[in-house]
Image (cartoon, rainbow, N blue to C red; front, side):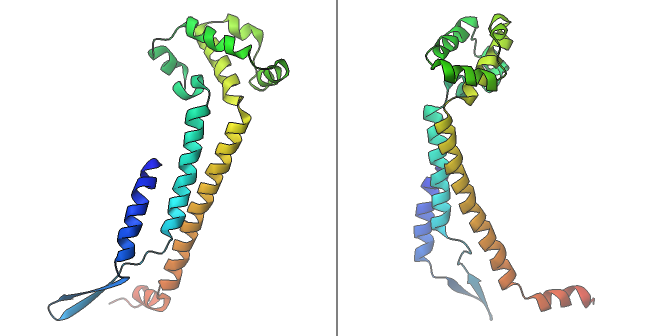
Amino acid sequence: MGFWLVFVPPMAKLLHEVTDVVHITLGDHVLTLNLSLPFSWQTLFFASLFFSVGNLLISLLGPSIVMLHRDFESFNSAGKTLKHLSVYENKLSQIPPEKRKRLQQLADYSSSSLKGDAQDRFWSLHGIYSLSLEWVRLFCCIFYAIGFLLLADILLKQFLWVLVSLDLASYIRHFTAWP
């Protein structure tokens, strides 16, 4: 997503300087190229900006066990052990008791989960931490939703542009009048 934040402004500036219609002469024929785009570069830039802010929020503030390890295989292949899981378990004690209890219920966590093998313990902790930091998840969802709405706006405008520019009569004649 960050690529679009870097790519869109220079391309918009470059294409802003180019005229909308270019005439190219090839022998006796004159080709007319329409270089205008059916969407707004500003909309694309702001969609990219909202996606990037959402990604940045979750990257900086998301729980480390969730951000670093999508599954137990990732955790295991990183050479982490039960000792590393104990660090995450100790951090759970810093969460206020009523919130911790609610997270444990939502994650279908039981105290016996932490007495199991490393994989059971990992998934229990992963589930709890995945549900924590509600405000970060809420803001990420808001930023992503705005980004998707802006992209949907671009897609709708492109679709409408094609419909308006389509010469339907000649298109139908093309398929009905066989040579």
